[in-house]
Image (cartoon, rainbow over all chains, first blue to last red; front, side):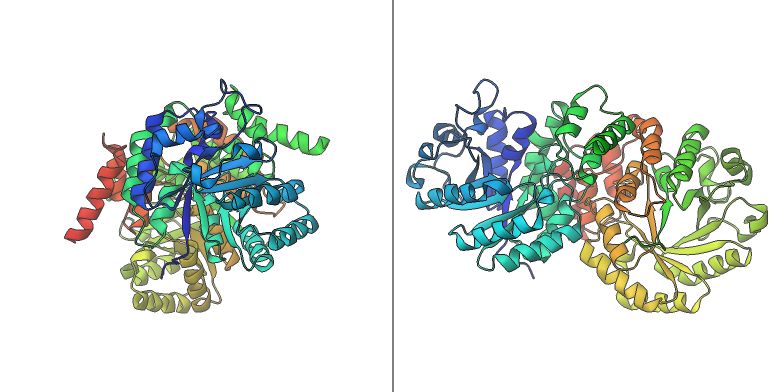
Length: 316
Length: 316
């Protein structure tokens, strides 16, 4: 029996944008949107809301800012069953810049934060909640957090009015046993909240970890078309939809989007499983260095990258 | 704490040979062998032992036959800690053609079989056991086996002298819950035997399923360099070695082999995760049709392949 409470959250544009500075053309974004709607995907995260004081328009495409006019050019008034989400980073947007929900086509604001920003994240999320949005907090880089600090953060979340909280494997460094253990911790600390999972594929664990999270109570599931996302990418939407037994989801529209737009993008940008990402994931390191290595002319020197990372470990 | 009883079995040449008819040059096979030895890999399966009456020498390279002279050209007398294995298919080799162990550099013979061949497989394996080899039976395509027949087969294996038995996900169609359930069945039915896992990566589950099998008692673990193997390939050796905590294993020699030989092979043959393999895996179908599709000029027509498979399902 399928779990009726499960919601699938597409992050193709938002997380994939980390690989091309959100320079997707309208046709690309429209195709992903149409595929999500037809496939029964519950949420589409169409980008970040950011301030132009924090990021330049020249270096970043429209989905780094999610201006209302850009959104409506793609989705109109979005009279569909697929809700729209945008992510915000603490300190990269002024809260006044977020319109009341009734003036926006966005339905959900997700606040990404590090452990030391939990109180600010709650403040931001409750602010957006009061403006009429669904809200969510995504605690990043949990694999580097000291357990005491995590427990304190979970207590703060529990006391807050924020209804949704995410387990985020930012470095793609978690195995299923970690996911099981963290999901138990999150569920126990947050019995009234909905828990989500956002996985990365450094060690080819993103889809498997998403399944493990489902088994342990996660009901909001992030995925991207063909896994498009930072570095090794994310849980592949096509695997997730093929796995879920809920009859409301359809695989064919996802494959249409992949075939027409996402798969051809491999000509321009490189994402997905590669040995340097596996190395950084297995060492529980931020993918920054593996991404730089992949961008250099040494991208196929796997031994060189392992040695570099080992040297760094010894020096630290 | 790591499990001391775990053994890693490299299948790069044997399973990867399904993609190029075992036409690896000596330098390639020597590199894999050297990497396995230096990495502490317990077994290297160097190919199939087959009869030239069953397969032509013209169409297949030496690792489809594993003649003693070919083996020794690569490994000499193999005075290393890495044991050598060859696989046999029922009916594709005469048992008389297998020399006594003392005349061969091979250490293990693995018998691959389908459910209806279990009695023949036991006969073959015990024959090789009596000739002095370690032996193992790999029951293929278990995802299509009726439970009653599987239970009967396990009773036969339990009564046999064959000490090793494999859970094989031939179609890459099993999720971790299936692996857990099958591992429990196998372990319960075969309390005195060593259980192995051989996974395929159609749904990006090969490595995760291998970990699930370990958690549920599997101690022989098949993997291949960069996942090289039929269709979507196998559990990647580099992920497995990075995961295992046993200090006898080393990642660097694996990466050397991948960097110098296996990664460059992508220029000539295509393996690994692709949408058609995901589709056949999720439908619990043999990868034959997805492999034909990938070899055709329609390989990037994912929608076409899904429709073809759905039509076939309706017609059947």
